[in-house]
Length: 550
Image 1: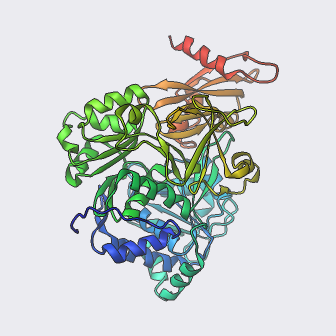
Image 2: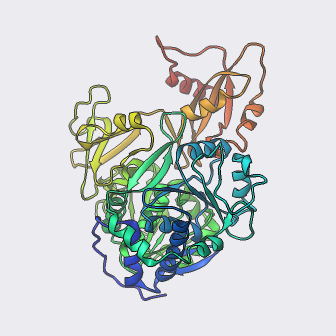
Image 3: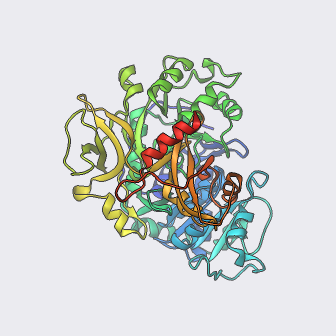
């Protein structure tokens, strides 16, 4: 679907994501844009045509500039089309974690303000998203289709679009959405484009912080393009090349790389679920020049596939993957020498990437640091207590600013004020240093957070959920090192007097309510807590965990 070229497109980040798609569709036409494991290949023109039809359908439902539309699906073409349909209307794509369960989904519907919710039947054998929706919003049962919804548990929600096969009223099918837009003229979309600008909010992703409920992190068009066109420029992604994108689209490491591909006129391929055997087959088929596994728990299983050979990735020039230093050197031995393995420091609040190692840098720099800032970004280290800016090799809180910085946390002014500091600096809550050569080194987290297989998990969220169990008086969650996921949650629990609960009962309490990656792998019962003058000392709980695991 089009010959490969060699030039990297220089992108103006003052455009919008919707305008970018239409521009690239006009330029690239029938060239490959996206490929999915179960759905095949789609050209730039086809994605643009289908997104335009869906945008007209959303307009007919009343969606306008600034409105919020939520999407909960695995990686699939309908996700891509829904997202760009929202962008063409100047609305906000609310990307919902496909692993969320009823408790988290209830928060999304109460908090996000989404007027339309997209989901799918594509992977019903694995996850039945329609069942999840009905379990979250039982008021849907018995409601007929046609009229806008009026639900107590989702006061802003007016329509549900169920993609894939089959129908389930009151949800409308994707075809019905497209039919609804037949009377909407092209002038409507053109008018939206004229009124939109790069500093409008484009996306909202839910990210766990130190609060009990996930926060809605709002990202602008300019921020997304600064971060991901920046990555494409540093990695040398050229028009007509291909990027492997295994991360889910609801993650900034999934929506970001496909934004990078579109910013360059490149293509990307992905799958509804990461499976190393299937991923290897896709890589052999599409022969990507760029690999974006992002996390070692995705990259290593691929490289350890029994059939994997270095020649399978011979066409690749770069691979971006965050991992501990020792793991980086292990991966280096498993990959062809010519591939530049790149590290990154980033977060959702940065629209993805702040610092990046350069492909031409030394092996030590690429494997043992998190690189230097992208063009237009700045980074500094501040004392976590005083806020004083620190010099080279002095560890403290990593702070950044630049075009990629997030706009705000939706409906949370206090958290926004705590995070966006004077001068536009963003407090990351991460601990690190900048060496004498200007390279960033991530050391750990100041915030009470876990990173489970690439997913941020707030200990406070898990603790708050455990407190809902009738037998639980108090709980504290810490991270336990795990070979596969990096770390996993473990809970210490104090039960109420005259109440009983087993470890298995408390773990089962999470089933179907919180995402599996948030579920504690072990529960340890305590009757006393290690305390400072006023607070539980979690570092002592971690020490206790180490002893218990021996």
